Image (tube, rainbow, N blue to C red):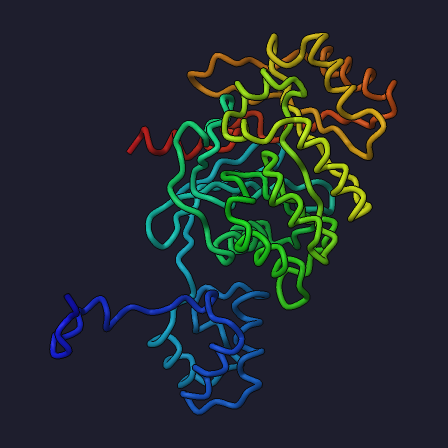
Length: 358
């Protein structure tokens, strides 16, 4: 039944404001035209929003005071706020950020000499259910907007007061289940009218969603792809990563071959070493067979121990065995430098800890 045209608007309908981050250039120009402003104001406003990450309209000092007041009445500057943070002895900082609707996400800033890397989330929670992942245990709350992905990076930048040099979308969530927002965030991070980070320093990590990998291969930018592999034995991978069980390893192998042929770029395979599960001789041989003769890099990860999990990390010696054996078949492998090992390093751990305390 349609609403009677005489029914008055609710207070929420009257006061609801759009986030400036969600406006297209056209929508922003239309708003400014309504306010009697010249076209060049749009670029000024966008610079405050995307480059300077303004937290209030009062900061926009090159705009007339009257315009700042009118904008404050019509739109908002988003809703990301810091709930808590943890600081590691190695300088890494992990943040739990609250979004405008109360959902929360984690991101991490990792400084190294004159560089600053950020690991950001694309979803609040994750539906993939990977057996060793703290985020997957909590399930999915919702996907993030492009602005919410972008704002995590800017929050870290402002906290460190240092330019971000690289970003990995390897936090909470499966980026390719939020494909459009992920690509929009990457493009804004890459843009000179955004964070200005080189495309090859922007990495997407996926569990291996083949249709989206092929779509990603056709994007014009030189973004980097990482695939969470964790086992090259189908049975083991099914147990560890039930969310991608329908995408068989043989089909993933073929898709990655097509990806390399189309892009000429070297993908990375992420491999979290789990003692007695995927670090055995047969698992190592399967990984060598999967990678040999391909253009690939293997990133070996020392598993972060998650409270209540039955999985334990492999030894450093075993990780070195993997590096040597992969090198023997022509595949470069590195052991990821574990950052933040003295804090809740694994994605989802800080979020879970705070939830338990509340």
